[in-house]
Image (cartoon, rainbow, N blue to C red; front, top):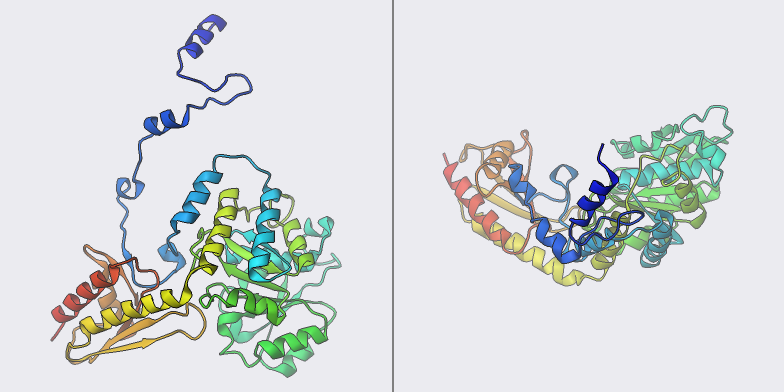
Length: 408
């Protein structure tokens, strides 16, 4: 065992320690910077990087965070603060920006759905929060109504709470399904065109029966107005992803809406334990970074940004449009990921290609470029709103070269 004298001798030899007992073993900032060299773990681990000509998909690590967001994350990492204090302050700011009564940062949009649903079920009763997901015999309502066309995967988040889903198609079925166990009516925004019941009618029925409503708008900005459109429309809760077009941390999201429901959702969320939301943890850096990302997005010159996207699409389309047998079409998705998007198709007898094959050819080599492509389709789609400055030229060149090589 080392003696006290030897221990003190070793400590005295250490450079500029901030303290020993009760203090931190911290080097001055400049010294720390020189001791810890910058590392590029992407290169160190041999990870493939690519130009994102697809979109802000989770599997492609969503979006890149702007400098303002990263500066916020790095700076806030130097301090201790109480997690609830951060949520209080940031929630107030986000609510003001999005014109809602209250808001909170969640661990992604899925987390917003889980916590929002939990809040609807438990209210501000911590004993009820401790019971989830075991609703039987709890006295809590247990059913959530949604349209069948809206049940395409994300509705599973609602069942994390123990709730039972009731799928309907028509206004008549909706009215018949409402009973004393109906806790909430859930709407998946991007599926509105497919459902028979639209926003206005959905909200009309909910308000008539005094049932809370939630709208999942995960990837439904731009346009920027969607950030407050559905709050003002009358939804009690609105959930959105933070790492897509908002360019915040991929593992962050936002839940906004009525104050009593946000308070209830937070009762089911960290730092509180003994609830189903304990694992839905979001750290202070992500909370603050999400706020700055939202603020930065809202304050962007959206008309200028849209014009830039149109120029990028046009550049790529012009680069391949003169190739015989190639057809280009520019369109804007109806709801989710609304931005100028390029569809490229070809005459089957002139090219030895499928959508999947062209996607693979764009992916391999350097530069590696990700597009939207499927095996069963004879086209690919190119999204430009994730492209960095000048990358549209790289995409255009590789696409042209690849198509020319595939000519029969």
